[in-house]
Image (tube, rainbow, N blue to C red; front, side, top):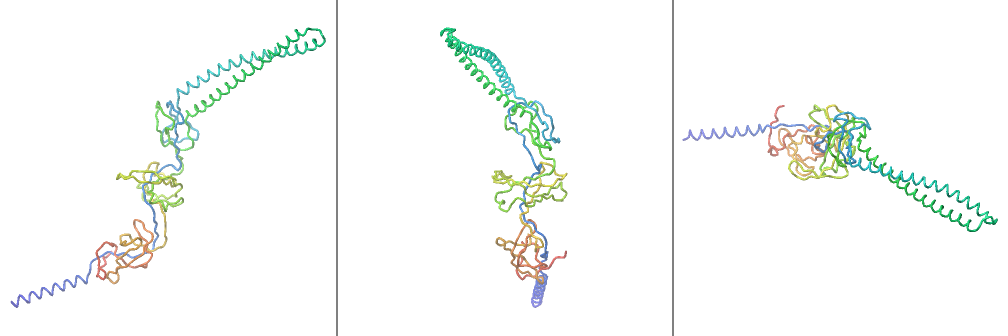
Length: 386
């Protein structure tokens, strides 16, 4: 019996010793020191590369595509013909107006000939009237002869005025018809579609023989110089975004060498998009100018970070080392003499990797890298070797 009691006591002592040893050794944790560095805070979204300037070329008239003079990807000069259209209705209308102009001109010429004859007859009648007026005063002719010349002159004057009005009417008709023909000629010129700028033909949305209506986008031309990135930002994230801010563009094709640019345009109106989860979102389009890069092409998808704030030489910790408690307040597991101290900190800027520590720590202070570990204040820990 005594032997069993002695053995039980020994086991209890051993258990206490092991527990004491484990407690003194503590849980093994990975630590990191608060260190100075640079931090960027921003909005990250997917963007799409485009030419720095893009022009949609729309059909101004309805018609049929009869000839395409360029191909997609081709370099074009300003004013170079891209395609040619034909409008049967416009051809018919032009032909009808030309016929009316010809008929009206024939009538005008005939009226002008009669007017000239009447004008000559009137001149002679007026001269005869003046001569007989002198003769009737001298008593050389009768009053009846004089009145006959007066009546003839008045008749010719009325004919002269009437024919003059007819000619003016024909002239007005000709002016109106010629103005209509000029309008048709201008519209006809719009059937020859030219590039508004020197650049690259990015899109060609039609083919020969296709019928198009006014407003149809026929092609798109972009400048051959720089690039731009188009990003649609959630309205809730727009409060800190301004023209001139720096934009960082990343893509696998850039081989981990980001391309930088600046915001040049913010659309004045939001639009609705449906997310991948089917949720309707209101977004605002932001355009940023980039430098030229041979690896990126219009249409490429890229990751865009709009830098809204930047701090240099400020105290930083990895985000996973800080447990957020309320807004910009947080807590870290500081390690002092291998024991845990629950330290309150004030945070500043944040990004996906790091957080700025405004107060609560100083440079070189050691904290547990993983703030999610269940560690009690005062508990002993063992710092894992690097």
